[in-house]
Length: 553
Image (cartoon, rainbow, N blue to C red):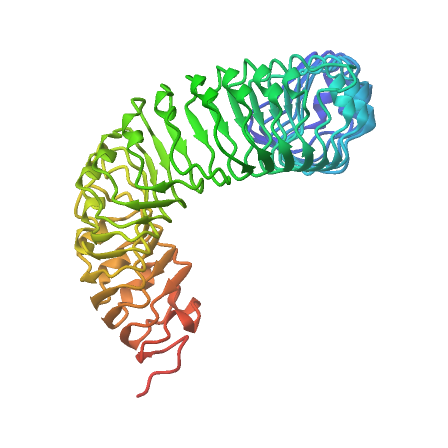
């Protein structure tokens, strides 16, 4: 359906349900007279269209309205205060618009409201205390707005609330629930998101009174102090995200009582070790992320392999020392993600790593590993991300490109072997089955030789970095076939000859560095090559033309 919202629809005075939802071609504004004539209207659905302009104040005259769904449009202006007169309203969905201004106090009059969803707008100001009067409210979503100020303590009076999303705003102050004076409770609250705000203070000691919680996200705030032992009372909890705060002390032993826990993420905090052995009771735990805490683990806890459901282990920056712990080989569950980066690991990458057949992400970067890439890595046919940068690895990079393919073009999309001591294997890029690579960084090695035309098979590649190596040859024309390239770094090598005219086909290129090679001749004139600064071409004594100086006749 294509057309404008006609004001004549208000002449249908007996309408009880008006459903024009999901008509992408419906544009124009909501008629200002909408509320003046449709006194019998109970349900108004205008969602998923292309409507613009403000929500008319007259909508507050639809006294029989029970459901108002005008989400996913391009509506602007404030939330009309007249909405507070719709005492029969049960569902108010205004999300994914361009609504601005502050929330009217009159919303607190909607005591029959069950669902209020205003996420993804530009609403600012404070959350009004009056929202705490909505005794029947089960879902409140104000996420992804510009709200500021404190979370009102009146929200603890929302005794029916099961979903509370206030994330991605500018809220500050402490978490005011559950109430500490015994007034009100939120025993139905199952899903809580307060992440990406500026909240501070401790997690309330009685947080465990929110006994129905299933998923909690408090990430990226300024919360501090120890985790309360009352977390052990959250027997329905399956996921908890606490990353990016200032929590300190040790993980409480009571966490082992949260038997339904699937995801535990407390990365980027100030948590100290040791880890409580009671965590071995978490037999449903699938992902554990303790990265970037001063745990000083030295080694991986002996109980970790006993977690029978474990699939993701993220222990970056936890102080692990010595060789990659052989205890990991004892894990029987299908590991899909393993991150041991930024530790103090030494020695070799063990061959048993190839037994993790379900592994899709392996990050061993920023350690002091000094071996070859083991041939067994070729067995990781589901591997999408391989990051070994900033070690002391030597030998050939060939093994990374010989990973068995389980799908057309292979699974590998991200490969970073930079800042090592690799010396050979560049001719194998693109030879095997892995040609869906989007990010390839081989910079800061000792790679020698010539690039093979097989590199031109990497049609999906966005970033190619071969800088700071010993590569030599004419600048290969087949690189121009990589038309998805956005970043190309070849500086500090021994490439010679002219820049091929075909490089003008790299229309998506946003970053180029060919500096400090032995290129010569005129830089091909045209976009995108003329858009880059002279530093992209400097250090090539024989190179001339824009943006460098003119060529000598």
